[in-house]
Length: 448
Image (tube, rainbow, N blue to C red; front, side):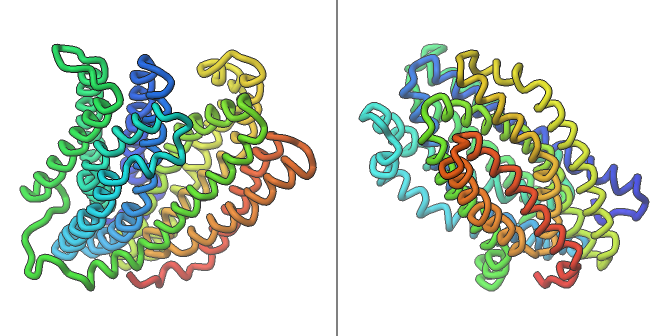
């Protein structure tokens, strides 16, 4: 797509053209996960718990993928903006090789030690056995998942968000069809339950990875790959990881913080925990527009810096941020007003329903700040400045959310509501930090 003209209308259209396929793709991914849970839920509660455990463990592997893909985005976007196709292709190939190499230890751990790694999260022997079966199967597909993740990042950095969306739709259709067949034993196939779900997801990942590689080799998209000598470039991989490690650390720190936060909620009982899980599921959907605008801003900033136009990079970032705040603000208002009806989609049991309404409304007050933080953080990552989003996340999670939750929930005595109040406070602090960093302008001179 190249870099963008400076007219405000053109910039906004460019942002939206990049963002909407990302938003739709993320929505489909979240919807697919929800449908999988609904299908196994027809078998039993233990199966739901097993897939939940396995899914969380797979999600933890994304910290490695983020470490690579963040470097990929920054380097590919710069090269693409500078109209250096050969260099962009080089960064893509080295990112893919690094991803596959780093995925191999993950495969070994998942296959060989599945019972051990799921045991701490399994309340019963049945759940442990089911979760181990799921993990040992789905972790075999980790290299393909890494290829999809990195390929998607590179294509978005090159300005193509529609092709990953199309491939994502195909993956979801395959996932749904095979899962429906193997989970329940339809069309003459054996009923494999949880393992059937893992097989279906793995085949979908394999198909998506093959499609991306085929497109790259045939050069049917904006960026491609070809054989290089030497095949592995350690200096390039170090560049990729130097940029990406702070982003991976940010994600890992965030996940650890969520575990501590969840532990505080558990202390207030089953109803509070149910309400919390409902709120987090709503959060997964609400995050999508902000993530879409973040990815669009990452690509635009990186491309404009590659084209040596930092002024347009800054202007584009602020336009993306304003649009993100407006969209997320509208969602916040909708969630706040319709919280009782949203919660009824999950439960009508009291007091879980009332608590869920409270959490949804408290969370709604944080949504505009989340939109700002996501988008400006994406802008900084596009410039290769991945450390300050990490600093803001660490400050928000460990200096605000966890201690403030403990103080308000347990010391002041506000209960689980006090734990939840810390969430909007955290995100407004994060936003203040990231705005100050962005306004400082040091990111314009960041070397990648």
